[in-house]
Length: 137
Picture 1 (cartoon, rainbow, N blue to C red):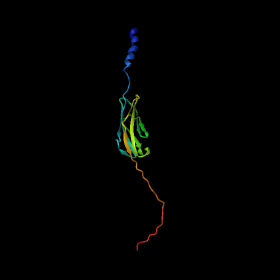
Picture 2: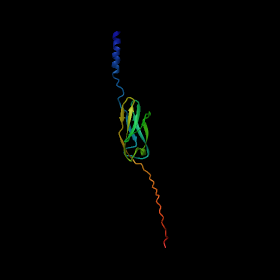
Picture 3: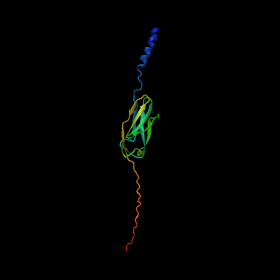
Picture 4: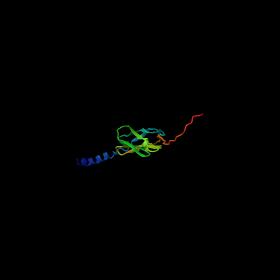
């Protein structure tokens, strides 16, 4: 009986040795906009993210840095981005990072988009000159 009691901790330790935890990173990709799209104003960016366990959060980045993050329990995450507030017109790179609750993360492939925001410029003139008009004779 004493031998069995002494062997129980050893058997428990050997039985726990095979458990390594979650080492599989999540999958993440940008669904829209597509590469080389020309966008303006506020756009909606769709990011797909999933994991074999649970996702902790999904972050969306542009060339300028973090746009926003989401911890919703959904497969497709939706982010609104005001491209007018982002800065100058030109090319921007978008990418997303997904984190799972086991500490794994994955980065999506980057998507390059073209931002083209139109500006309305109004010119006013305060110049006034008096001219004489002579009808043709």
